[in-house]
Each structure stands twice: as structure tokens, then as C-alpha cells.
Image 1 (cartoon, helix red, strand yellow):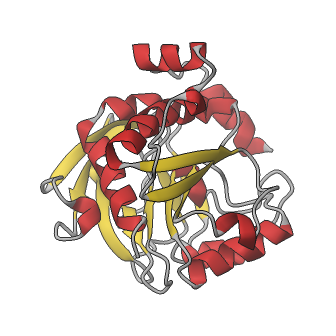
Image 2 (cartoon, rainbow, N blue to C red):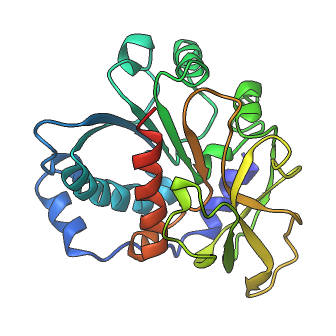
Length: 268
């Protein structure tokens, strides 16, 4: 696939998160080996991308989530494909995190179970970055339901050179955006563009100011939401575009956003 080849060439120099916590986690058997809350208040399952350019982000997320699980008293399990996903499996969890896992190549049983989970509000959902890679990729057709869930959008381009941008908070009273002020900067992101803004179909919580891109780029889409929730579905859900590189977990604004999203989405 052409896009995959471009990604591979664009991100060969992607930096890994040089934290002692990550090194220790890997040494003792991986991030999933870190202790979790013994009597969890709620249960989380995260589906994570395997290997590739997003592995550093996923690895850093697992370390950070282990700390969050202890602090906020929840448990978290990880899967790397959709083979286990069915109604019974999802019934064990109050929150589903799509940790850079794309919306294609899902098994039919998983597709049906996930759609019921969201439509019937059986649990909450947080999606990151690659979750809006909507289109025809790797020989798979676009998942129309997921496109509607994300506001009726289709992926068009991304910024392979990476740029920093100012994210404007549009819904400061929403629980997901609490404590983030009027704006915050996200550094060195590969901002996606879509065939249209999802704004007409979703509640936009934050958008990126494309005029703030540094260095400048011609890859823009105009109105550019980057955090939103679709209130047409019973499940509490939030999509967070940012999520390409591991250094985000050193950014207090990003970790605050992630924390808020967990607390909000996990509770009906």
C-alpha cells in the first residue's frame, strides 16, 4: 500500500521515549506486567497496534496507563487483534481504548459486537490517532459505520514532515477539557486531514489552528477539529487525534487530556 510505504520512509527517525520507567517495564516482562489496582473500580481493555511506527507511542502509553490504573483504581488488559472481541468479551469492560489501532481488518463478529457496544452504551470509548485512518487500506474496504461514528469523514492526507500546532479548546466546560485552559501546544505531530470537517455531526471539543503550524506547510483542511465526541451514540466516546509519538507522555497537557477522557468515558 502506498500510504504504508510513505509512513515507513517518513518516520525512520522517530524518537523513542527514553524513560527509566519504560526500560524497567520492558526488562521485567513488558508494561502489562506492572501491578494494577487489586480491586478495580472499573475495567478497561485497550486494543493496540503491533510494531511499526506507532510502537514507541503504544509502549509509552502502557507504562503511563499502568500508573493511572494504580492511581485511579482501575484494571487494564491489552489485545493486539480483534479475534477475542464479541459481546461476552466486551461485557467485562466499562471502557474500550483504541490505542492507534486502525478501523479496518476487524473480524465480522468483532465489528457487530463493537457496534452494539457503542450504539447501546454498554461501555465508553476513547480512540487515538490511527483510529480515523478511514478509507481503503491494505486491500480492505472502508468501514462505513465507523466513518459515521467519526462524523462522516474519510482520511485524505497527513503531514509527513511533522509540525507543531496550537490546539484551541472549544468546550472548556466539558469534563474532557477541564484544566487545559484556552489552548495548548502539541509539538511535532503529523496532523491528518479529512475530506471534510466532522463538525456538523459531532461535538467538537478542540481544534488545531492551522495558521500556527511551525514550520509552515501547505497540507491544511481549514476547519480542523482534533478532539471530539459524537453525541448521537449512547456510549460516552471521545476521539483524540494526537497520538503519533512517545514524547506526548512527557507533555502535561496531553496526559491531562488522556486522564480526563478515561475518567469521563468510563462512567455512564
